[in-house]
Amino acid sequence: MSNPTLDLIRAHGSCRRYRPDDVSNEMIESIVEAGQRASTSSNMQAYSVVAVTDAAKRAELARLCGQQKHIAQAPVFLAWCADLARLDRACQLRELEQSSEHVENFLVAAVDAAIVAQNAALAAQSLGLGICYIGSIRNNPREVIQLLELPRLVFPVTGMTIGWPEKPPRTRPRLGLEAVLHRERYNPNQDEALLAYDREMAATGIYEGRQVEIPGRPGEMEAYGWLEHSARRVAQPMRTFLREVLEEQGFLLK
Ligand SMILES: Cc1cc2nc3c(=O)[nH]c(=O)nc-3n(C[C@H](O)[C@H](O)[C@H](O)COP(=O)(O)O)c2cc1C
Image 1 (tube, rainbow, N blue to C red):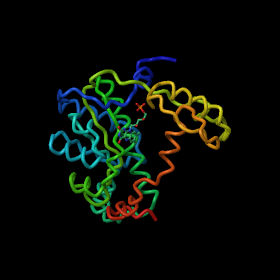
Image 2: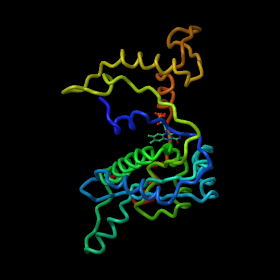
Image 3: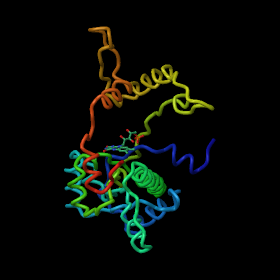
Image 4: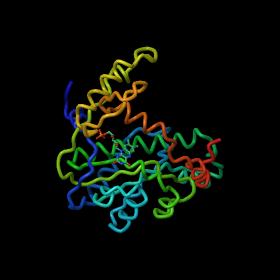
């Protein structure tokens, strides 16, 4: 099937090279406003976004987010935050006390933030802009919280660079539908789809034709593909300090 919305969605590719041209304030506002039209849990709108355009601040964010050059290069950085602070204020004004200490409360706000971010991403792309999510905003969350002056009950879930792409972004293949779309019940038998996708990704050249030893067959090599890439990624514990930082921000995750 095809229509302009589906075509826009299908053309997505993360953009990591930007022209130096500015993105107008009007565009930033339209993008965030479009993001706001997303569904939100009980219409609570438990998110906020901090837009950073100041070059020195973007350079500092690039440093805090794993020295990623595209953060300093893109004219706009959006920090999408789970935000229960506004609802704390609503409670104060209505003389109630917010129950924000459970995992559910953080999940509501984090899901809200992610959904609004993706709506905004599509809005930006519809204007011809490129975007890249920046999960590395969670590499040094304390410093990011300080830099952006995020109050208690506000936590940066993901960043996003926005700017004019140097060239149209490349679209990466995705897993076959049979791996992600289950009918009536979950189907755990996905090996065929995974192996096919592994070969498809290796053939794109994204992994630069690297080779890797076949598990259990010493000395025998095969193409480095999505399986090796993803398995290596999840075999390492990541950002193991996040519970502490969340607790410091008032998300107690009980
Ligand atoms: C939550 C999230 C965090 C991400 N963090 C980063 C990041 O820190 N740096 C980066 O260059 N790309 C980041 N990405 C982009 C992914 O690497 C990218 O979406 C994925 O490889 C698929 O490629 P595509 O978006 O070009 O289709 C992130 C994506 C998501 C959804």
